[in-house]
Length: 166
Image (spheres, helix red, strand yellow):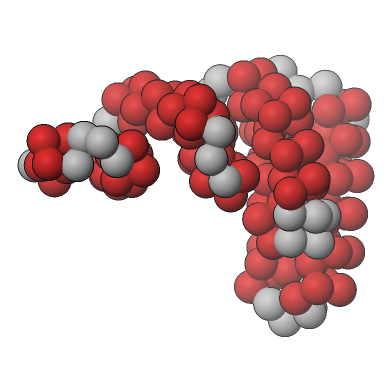
């Protein structure tokens, strides 16, 4: 209902529409309607890129899309989006020590680790990225920060996956 109202009364404000669509996509994903959420997140990301707005909005839409792609098992597409589009933009606009830039690198690591077709080289790449991100998280946020602890857990999961593939 909110999206319909926003389209009716604020159709001239694409940002308002994209915000409502983002909320709808999150609700669809939470309800288990992941395919519908993925379609909507593709549309949101494409519109954000087409609008040429602020990098943080494009990165957020792209991050949501990459997480949906990973959840849907579309690992190759998620890795391409993260490596080729989002990471370069995040490094340029935010810098490598920004929390969101590190989040994007972590999403890449998850896509590499969770891919059932991942090679040992993929997992070594994930380990290298995660070690670097963990070092930056410790320096920027400190060792007790929850995102630092999550990083430590993800590095352990990557190393477990590497041990299994030996």
